[in-house]
Image 1: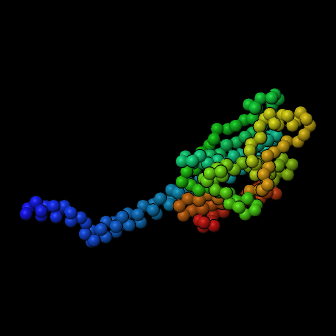
Image 2: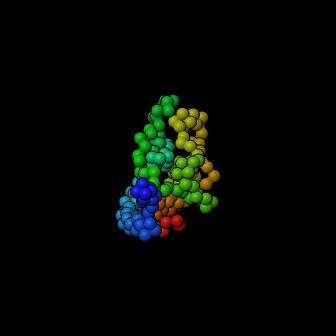
Image 3: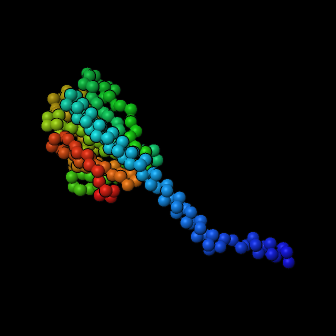
Length: 209
């Protein structure tokens, strides 16, 4: 009889009230935790947007003084987002080493969401497969943005074109980038690009806009 009672006690499990109490405790903890994370995510959004703005400023300055200056925003799955510069040194020779490639600079962790919009209205999410790179450069003659680049240009390509008397052949796609958006938590910032002037305006937006 005693063994049956012990077996019955072991199979009793949790009562409905106990389950409700546990769920309520978790809800309270989540209510405390989530708001505390928002400032951290918001800081990451601000830092990433300022890093991209600084990268555009530097690339434009370099483009006005070099044959080629390009900036690449890229996403590494599970790691985060990086900025890399490709700058032509203008040196003679046929080596691809004449292109100065800066070490990638991490600007945001993987949980941040960075996307860009082209002039057709299509939104490209850098964290999605096949959309993990955005390459931008400037037109030296006008100071405005060139179209989105499909790949970076190499030094050997530059030298070959110069030797033949041709202009630098950039790898223009069919569209301009009009906006770069950074989201995290309850904060979202966008850089609105002006393709004519090469400038940009940074604005705060509601997430999902």
